[in-house]
Length: 165
Length: 401
Image 1: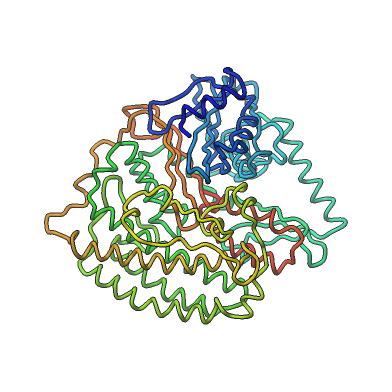
Image 2: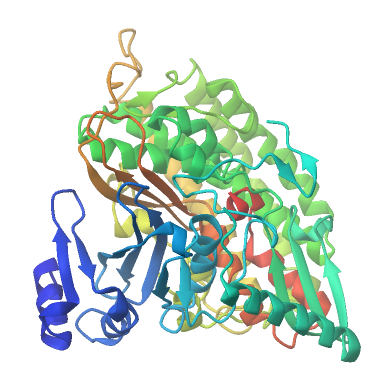
């Protein structure tokens, strides 16, 4: 099934609003999905007998920078029966002064997403709704700030101890 | 900037409550971070009822150094040494994946001379053997067999010595560069590699006699830690974990990258010979069989390198190094079969004049393979937990990144 077929399949199933745009300039085309529908889209792509995207390769949280004021998540799906790959992206504008951006969790579809979403929360500061156990995973529980944000300032002290770089 | 989402505190509170409640009824037992059978600095928090493990909560990050921050602060070439430190038992495979991704973004992946590609595959397969030798040896130790560990370490040392000869470094090579190699293979390397293959084949027979068919070993691993195929896929397991569950999924064959399409080798899968399909013994056996296949790949690479792709005086492995590593703005996810499973790098390149990616992300196989541990260890004995954990074969440098 080609990229265009998958696009048509999603439009057919969820309506035209589900696709917010597409990126076809590079080597791997990507679909921009409406952020609220991502869990449904993943479930459909996993269960549909024409696609069977049963393997979540990678989940990446992205901070698009302070000027862009935008956060996003990138999903790389793979279909083992059909040997296909697909990139899905969701993003929304978000003012970082008002707390973390919130996206829907896809843990109910792919259990892989559990730890990946915890990592995205830990390092980029993206909150995932309906995640069963959204704690920090790589950094200590009391760490402040999110290191992979573009405006992250390295901490000078940790628990009152000066950090030498 | 201390923005705390109250929902985050809820999750933390729920975890603390669970541990507090478990300390009353059951026992909370800490395994690691300095426990030898956690293969590094991993802490497993066990909620146990007597000898039965009710729940396993892995805590990681003791080796975290934020590779992705390095990746987006340094140029593509400068990050290669950092990729070596991800899976430090199979560094060649890591840098190969990274380099392949960058070359495809630059559009020069078709221009790489065949000799370089064959050398890359050769050293990658040598490193895969070394990694599997560690996996098998330490697995033996976990179960209580000490001798295989010493024997396999002795054999692994030959590989380490050869790769040191080629790259100048024993474990962290920085040998594969974007567009080429650090140096050509030293004179006599091919002959030495052949000697090693001839020396090593009988050693694998010895290993099978000592460990694979050992009744104690089979009793400890067969029917233990059964990982059904659908669970493995849903948890994103890959590599020997997924193949141990009986699925023929090897990216060297699926994606046909580098020169693997020209090479003849089989993909071993678990068959449930000693017990149930997808048990610890199957995962172990897949690794043993993969060593044999890697030796075959090595032989074929050496055949080509000694005949039609012979070294010539004017061959320069750095001739194709690009002056400027500036890909077009694009996103690219590259995946390849590392020693532990699907190793992926995701690049987000936004500035056409920059040599630094906007965002670089690693999809490390150990991280995903480990995430299935709490699922398959519900209700097992503590001793079996060690056996299951050892059969996953993780490297903490890659889990924590």
